[in-house]
Image (cartoon, rainbow over the protein chains, first blue to last red):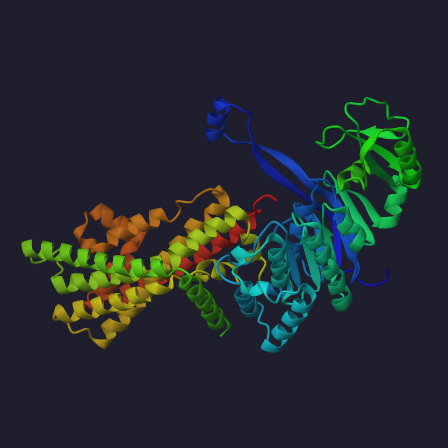
Length: 327
Length: 261
């Protein structure tokens, strides 16, 4: 990496002060008069650098510090310690020049007004970012082509489906052609088709504009489709920074086979792989199997047992990360 | 210029939003007329019993009512809707987006919502002021009129600064939805000339929470009761309060952590 990094993070830390009290009425009254605070380290001495045009997946379980880091990089939060530079700017100075070349899109927040069509909110953005009519029209046409906004951006936002709204939110965040995109769970809550569309869009957008993208997601598919590189943080600390393929090698790739057996058959399945606690599906057992053995194990299961249903799935991203660092 | 462009876009968006609610607009117009009638009636009752109120005659009080309504319109057209929006954006975290746009956040927070139909109110207030002044037999000299305009402007700045401080308190207290109710309650004291109130209350509404600055004082200027030094003092007070408010806002934003993800 000889190029100057677009994003440079050096020993970045953030500690929150959180008020806390014990449960119960008396404690609530006491807490009203005297608050007790506790320091919660959300991000601890995280360092990394990202080169122009890279798409990096930023992973970690809930509460790992992903959103906090993104908020510091976009400028919303002041760090407790450490340094960060994005495109040469210190984000939390909130310089207009910086705000004009970056965007933060959060899957769970709305920037569009509910009562009017997205197209009208876009015009507001045009004014806020001082876009010329020509630039605005060109970018909008391009986003329309990629996201198929045509009919949906003329309906009041409150009448849109979640997927449609996310498309409009993304478009609103990208009208000013930012060079750096911070995306916090851009596909959260969307159905599979909508997720795939957003993913394809981001890929194409990155290819066309060369924008640098740092995204968090809970969906492994997002990460495998978009990112060659992942950064993993866990409990506020950087745990891994490198290629995605290397990560799966390091973790020893495995799949989860879910089997539903005939009525109340209690069989010992541990001979087929590691049994793991299932989700909340009754009667279904989950077996963790190395990816290379999936075919063989599935064949054996089908041959040996009275199977009603069988599924093969990637482990959830949390499990991958847990496994990587608790091993 | 960019500011004007933004304001006009904000206005456009707000017209679009209010056109979606026709009944609301009509009802609000009617309510407004009713309130005006009520206020004029209460003034006429007072003057049927006495010739002056705190040294002010009927014409002057009608003009004061006009100024009071001007300020009230400012409240209803800008301050209330933007407060509502601000409080909601703190709760749902969309304030994050406001802070990350290359436009001063306070500008957006102050002007993003404009209750458009209040334009009528504005006209009504001006008519009341003009009618009141002419009825009181006073001929407003050009100098007095300029002073009046300057002081009405700085009065608005004072109320605005107070508002900024009140909503910025949300950054410290998180839940503070009643922030502006206090302001409205105090503003209601501006309905009558500050001189009718007991001295202690007059001090409070002139200097502590300077509502009188926005209503009584401009009218005193119109009556030619103020010296140039006094006018300058009131303008300086407005400038100082704006500076303080901007500082408070800046610290508040720094403190803001965003609704937890």
